[in-house]
Structures are given as structure tokens and as C-alpha cells.
Length: 354
Image (cartoon, rainbow, N blue to C red):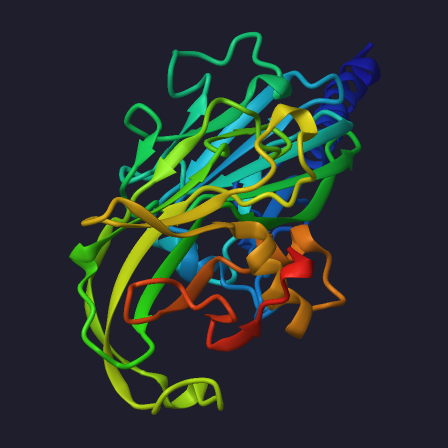
């Protein structure tokens, strides 16, 4: 009896030690980079290198990020956000406590958690709660006033990835982002070098692209008119644009207009009921006559054909987000449509291509 009483406490101690070891093996550290031996969960890195430089600039461009996690059936699991200066650190990783094995979809948005955001995420920023939320419910809608947009859009970035986890697993995953917002600088210049005023013309872009679904596809909601968020006069040094067909190169006073748009889509006519293309329109204020009315995407593709012919159209539009287009006018303020300048490159126009 005495021997039994001695063994029982010993067995109890061994059982407790085994339990402690077992629990330790399946416990997650809240911070993965703490040097411990048994991290678990998911560590997410965000990369924005889908640009013309092919260089990661997430830490320079994105000032807030929101991550959504959905299970294999598309049901909401969790969401996290970060909007502190920690995003400026290239080594930043977001930790997600995923303990249950399964296949998960990660949706990331840059620019939606910021106070100065230009898009709202539906339904989360229009109604409270995530109960019953499905991945297909999510969509981003650009701010506008009755389909008129005249602000400089805060950058919107989108990324999607899938990951398969085991129970109490540890993985690292990279979510690659693309930029969904663009800025256009439209320059009007007289061929003879005469001064031109921005107040002489109206400049705007029209497109049906204010609404983006969970796959980042544009959904038709109505045509938006994009107006300049700033305009004025500037001295343009066109010495880098020298061409035999141009008049004497040198600094000249030109009118400029800057407009900010949502994602540009290369789409054939009539697809999904969407307008075939965005249009750029310039009107004479005095005569209310259209000086320029062009299919914007097709003209941007002329620039692609010279420099990035191996890149497909949509990749080209998604990688480039800063556009400068210069148009030359004759003495009657009519567009000389033999060429335009796109991002400092002279693009000769062949009507057959358009």
C-alpha cells in the first residue's frame, strides 16, 4: 500500500509534464519573429512590384493595408489592418492566427483603411458586422458626386492569394499587389509657341469604372466624368522632343490639366455591357467645340507598341499609373493629330491603327 501511494504521485507528475510538453508543441506565438522554436500561424508579406520599374515599392506607396481571410467555401474567417509607420519597413510582416488546417483565400487592399481613402469597401464600410460575409460580397466603390469625380484619388492597391494550412501549421505567404488608380497630366501646346491658357479649354475623361468586385474586375455602374483636380499654365521645355515636324524647340507656355481615375481596363467593345473604352475629351470654352475626342485606351496602346510590345494590354495598363500626354494645336486651336507625346515619347498616329 505504501509503495502504491508513492507511485501514484510519480505517475501524476509524469502525466502533467507530458501534458505541458504537448500543449507547448501546439501553442502559437503571437509574434513569430521572437526567436522561439515553435511558431505557428501565417506570416504575410505584401509586395507591390507590378510597376514599370519591376521593383517593390509597397513600403513607399502604401500607407494602410487591410487583409481579409476566407475559407475554401468563401466564408469570412478574420480580418486585420495596419496603418502605422511600421508599413514603411521593408521587413514588415502581418501575423495571422490560423490554427485550423484548410485552404484559405487572402484578399488585401491598400488604401482602404486610411482616413483619406477614395474608395469604400462594401458591405463593411456601409453596414456593421461581418456575420455571414462571403468573399463574393466584397467590392470597392470609388467616391464620386453623382458620377462626377474631381479629386486626386488616394492610391488603391489590390492583391489576392491562396494558401493551404495544416493544423497548427506555420507558413509564410506573399501577397502581390497591383495599383488600381491612375493620374493623367494632359498638356496642350501651340505649335507656334504662343501662350495658351488652361481657361480656354475644358478637359475631362469619361469611363465606366467606379466599381471593382472581389476579383478586381470592373462592374458596370454608370459612366463617370473625371474632371481635373488641378489645372494651370506651365513652362514646357520640349527640347527633348525634337522632331523635324515640330517648330523651333525650346521653353514654351502650355496649359496643363491633371485628372485622377480608377482602374483602366482593356476590353473589346460591348463586353459585359461596359463601355468599350475610356475617352479623353477637350473642348473649346469659347466655341463649345470639341478639339480632342479620342478612345483613351487605344492611344495609350500606341505608346505600348513602341516600348512594351511583349507585354499584354492589361498588364501594361496595370503596371503604368502615371501618364503624361501632350497635344499640339494649330493657330486656330485645332489639334494637329499627326502625333502626340506620351510619357516623353513621340507617338506617330496612323489612323488605320485606330
